[in-house]
Amino acid sequence: MNHLSCNYLPRRGLLAATALAASVLAGCATPGTASAPASATTAVIAPAKAEDAVRARAQQRWDWLVAGKYEDAYTYTTPAFRGLNTAQNYRNRFGTGASWAGARVQSVECATPERCTVQVAVDTRVAVRGFREPITTSVVETWLLEEGQWWYHQAP
Image (cartoon, rainbow, N blue to C red; front, side):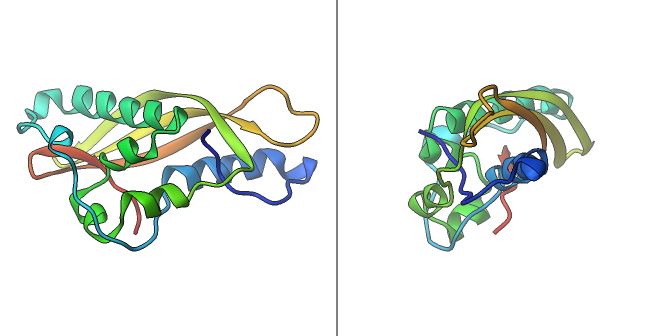
């Protein structure tokens, strides 16, 4: 099951906490070492197709997060991030206070040939009485073109 950590969420701050939680879920890690599997890399993406490539990779990464496949989602982080962080350490950053119910890439904008911004709508189920329906928040991600592939920029 996929989760993020929180010990107590007062009702008044639930929406703010959910937005913060979605942001935390989108980018947290601890030190370690690892490398990407061969399946995570492909040939250079043509600039005209950058938005399509980033959209597909961002959606796949979120599909894996929602399914609890953190090790697969980890393979979409930048090579530099994976050089400093293990898949297990990446996995250990996610707690139990809420769970993702779904995620949809809403938009992709590439300001340069090597950098894109992705906006994702994330549905989160919060473990607080009275909240049965998922709460949808917006997460903004940065994707970078490195070594001929698009990677999610995970803050170290």
